[in-house]
Length: 297
Image 1: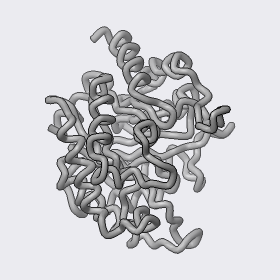
Image 2: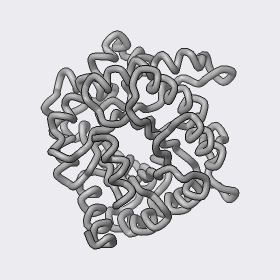
Image 3: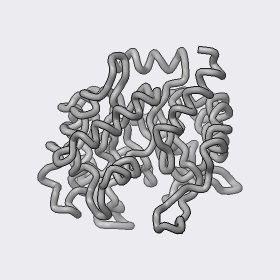
């Protein structure tokens, strides 16, 4: 199944899903409640989000496990349930996946800075990601996606953790900010250095997600593609978050404006394309129409 996914991206653009958290909030997830808890307490709601993205045309849906490392779950007293909650996240996605579609095990940042900036050691992070990967693999994911990483060292530790417990391919996306001199992570990691290190560590695909608008993502994909022969992943934000009059958060890019830059993202070299914050099944549905139209599939 996974080998065919990596073969598929050689023949056409492969669609990821969009945001998970906002979809769960729309279904009643309260402030401060870890989304991963719903894998056990509200499985129907989680499965419903997965199904909505598959129905919209996503080839791959990411599991509701972005904050599922024991280190991240510890803030809610749930570190002892990491294996259970990650396994449930993957099983629910597997149940929702139509034949021929894929499940990616989402692994987000732990929220802990590595020494000397913070108290975490690389061994701490490797162990945390290994525990998460074990649960996701047990639940039936096809691939791991280590995403929204702002520290290259943490991303590399996550790869080590995942590969220590499973032979499944590992995809990695970092979150870059746009500067006049190029694209850099919060910790100052450049695209070229990041991609080279991730490829050396065994990543099967690399890319960027979050932070950047779809317009900014075009240049970032060009920079990534220049630095690697691996498949490139691009999951842009729908612009920047903005506070709305009713107290909720919206995003600065309209659906039409967001999708307008998708063909350029694909032309720049992104083989895997999806959405991040501010995107939803409607976004993915529109992206499918644009991409399939461009490709005449």
